[in-house]
Image 1 (cartoon, one colour):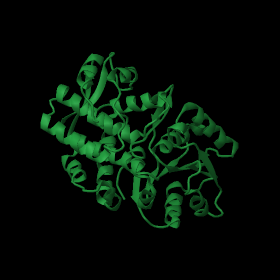
Image 2: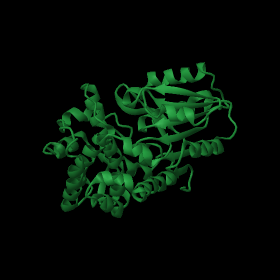
Image 3: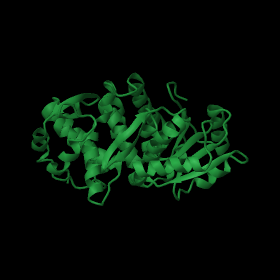
Image 4: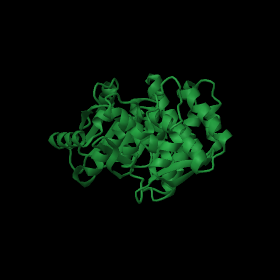
Length: 351
C-alpha cells in the first residue's frame, strides 16, 4: 500500500479481497454503481463479487469514443434513472479513458459522490488513475472539460495486464518511460535495459516505482500550478497527434501518440532546452526500439499546429511545452512560437 492522498493497493488476490477493500473504503452506501466498458469480459466477475449488495452495472463505450460531453451526459442520466443518490458511490473498472470520464461523472453527480478506480490497463495503473485528473474531450480537442478530484482509492491487480493486447500494454510503457525521463534517470535506465518490455508484467517493483514518481509530483502540486506540468512531456505533440488522427477517421492509441510525441519533443529539447545531442539520440533509440512496430507516420508539423494552438498549457499566445534538460530532468513552461516548432520538426521522420 502506498501512502498519500489516494490509497493505492497492489493485489493479485480474489474478488473477495477487492470486495472487502471497497467496503472498507466506502463504508455504508445506499447503492454502488459499477462502471465498466461495454462488452468487457470482466463484467461477470465484477457482478459476482458482490452478491446481495445494492449495486448496479453501468456499461459505457470504451476508449475515446466514450470520452466526450455527450457520453458523459448519457452516463449521468443513466446514473439518475437507475436510482443512484448522494449516499451512493461509483466504482470504475476499466482503462484510462473510463477512469477519466467515470471520475468526472462521480465528481459532478449530485455535487459529488465517492469514487474508486479498479484500473484494468497498464496506462490506467501507472498514470490515468493517479493524480486526480478527470476530463472529457470537446470538439476533437483533448481533455478540454474536467476537474481535479482524487478517488478514494485505486486497486491494482496485475492479472489484468496478462490479458492486454501488446499495443495496449505499450501505452502504459510510454507513460512509465516519461516518468523516468522527466524525474528519475535510473527508472528510465531500468526500463530501457529490459530485453523484452513485456517482462514488465512480472516486475511489480518497476510498476510501483513509476507510480511513486507520479504520486510524488502530483501530491506536491495537485492542481498543476507548477511542478506537475513536468508530466506533460510528450503530450503537446502527442495530444495534437491524437486529435489529428481522430479527425482523419483513423484514431491512434493515446500511449502510442505520446511515445511519438516524446520522440518529437526530444528534438525540440535539443533546440530549446539544451538537451545534449547524444542524450537525445539515446532517448529516441529506446523509443523506436520499443514502439517502432506500432508508431504511425509523423504528419507534417503544419497539420499539428492548429491543435497545439488550442492546448490547455498555452499562455500569451505561445505554445507551452514540457521539454528535457537532461535525462531525468524535465523543464516546463517552455514557450515556443509555432514557427519554432515547424522548423525544428520539419526534418523529423522516425520511419
